[in-house]
Amino acid sequence: MARSQSLRHRLLEEVFRIRAVDVHSHVPAAEPFARSLRELLGYHYYTELAHSAGMSRQVIAPDEPDERMIPALLEAMAAIDNTVQYGWLVELAGELFGFQGGRLTHRNWQPLAEAVREGAARPGRAREIMDLSRIEKVFLTNAFDEDLGAIDTGLFVPCLRADALVFQMNDPAVRGALEQVSGVAVGDGKGLRGALGAVVEHFRQSGARSAAISLPPRFRAFPVAEAEFERAVQGMLRGAGPGPDEGAVLQSGILFALAGFCRDCSLPFQIMYGALRDAYAHGVPQGTDLPQAGDTLRGLLPLLNAFPEVTFCLSVLSESQAQELGSYGWILQNVVLSGHWWYANVPSYIARDLAARLQSVPKTKLIGYYSDMYKLEFGLAKFNMYRRVLAQVLAGDYVEAGLGTEQDAVQVARLLLRENALRIFTF
Image (cartoon, rainbow, N blue to C red; front, top):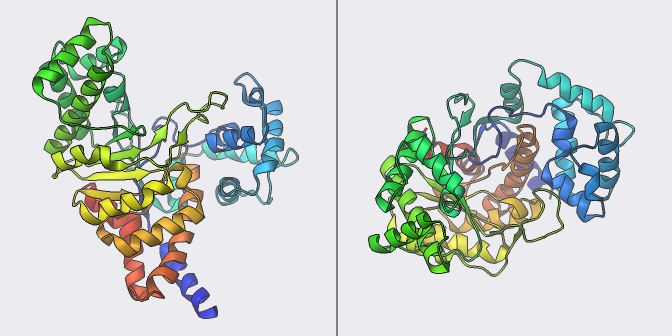
């Protein structure tokens, strides 16, 4: 036992030296760090967990002043101080703001709030947080019509979020924005493809290194003939809205077109699969989505088979998909296993899935972790959590399992945290 703990400790020291690349976040480029304690506590993990434990949604109403909202939310959060998400808050508060308490309460929150405000006022705060977090680059999630010119590409990497293009093309406002940003009229299927291609090329020229999309459970991708796509586009343009079949044709046709442009621009395509959106009608904002167990990735196979030149970085939510995802990485050359997404982002789940991946998938096809964060501060706590699990799994399920030496394990850690991302996304 002592020898195992010593090995884990040595590996942990090495893992913490690695500067990571975070390939998926929701950090807004204009306001990447928190300017108030309310912004940290408003992270959906805290509001949804507190609401789940009985807190009224009124507590976090936008018009509630901090003096009422923060103490009430912290009182409700006493029920969640057993969770790893609460641990993130305490860790980042200590490392980034000098907070000394083990719990944040109505008695001690005000000094932390002041420290957050003071930190936000310091020049170079984004880089400071990333340096303390040992994170070198953070990928953003950018709408197709977002202004990319102001992004600090020394810190951040643009990424085309394609959800609106695939699922909201029926909305005239979305089509109008697409025409404006692309300079191409969407009057038929050829025009729509041309506009999509112009957007992807614009992102590539602006420093983007990938496209990304979240697909719902049971989404089925299939190749679409030109005539079928044209009929679906014309139905969309008539304004009546396509029927179920035409809607599926339009969505798959757009998705296949985007994958083709990713191939032409040498951009990987990140796919997060399986979130059932707005499943809980009574949830707080961003606290309404759930995973769907028992679903399968087979609906993606036509897409994966059609574009062998495109690297697809796949993430899933449920345990029932975890082995299937591992098998895809095992067999499909163009599939990379990426991160531990959302509901799987808990140490016990990460340890299980990480051990299986290390024992069955080429080490060059694993992107160890991404933060999915909304503010930079959470990168510190989330990546620290992953680093601890990574050292533990490498010690027990890799070195002690006889799969490699301690030096080999350190190199694997570098691949998962940094080098695979740099190679896959061509930095």
